[in-house]
Length: 116
Image 1 (cartoon, one colour):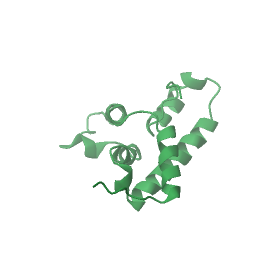
Image 2 (image 1 turned 120 degrees about the horizontal axis):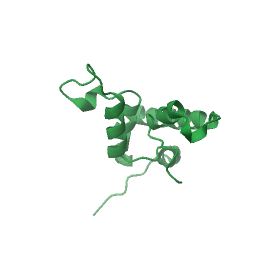
Image 3 (image 1 turned 90 degrees about the vertical axis):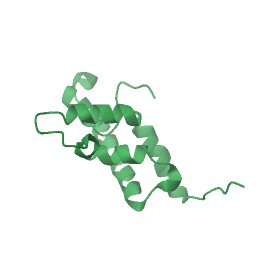
Image 4 (image 1 turned 180 degrees about the vertical axis):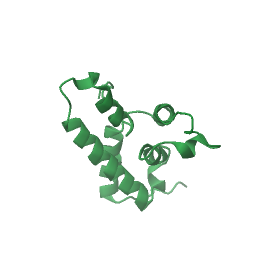
């Protein structure tokens, strides 16, 4: 018999909001972060550990099931939601063509070019 885990309703909302804002998959985010972190001294023996923050934390949450979330994961999700929304509201004149703005959002797992 499978037992259904009960989560705090607030965690359910945060989970849904997080996955609405972080609109790229874990592998796509990992590849992006590896690209962003590349350079002569960027990679150590374990590339996943050398991924830029907070992307590495967001990636770790994306790889988890909802029932496995820790309080730290919930805080990462809250922070990601806030940062993505704030950056999205600060859309520059050049919009999606502004690489610095778009890359800042991609670092958080949000691609402005992905349709919702």
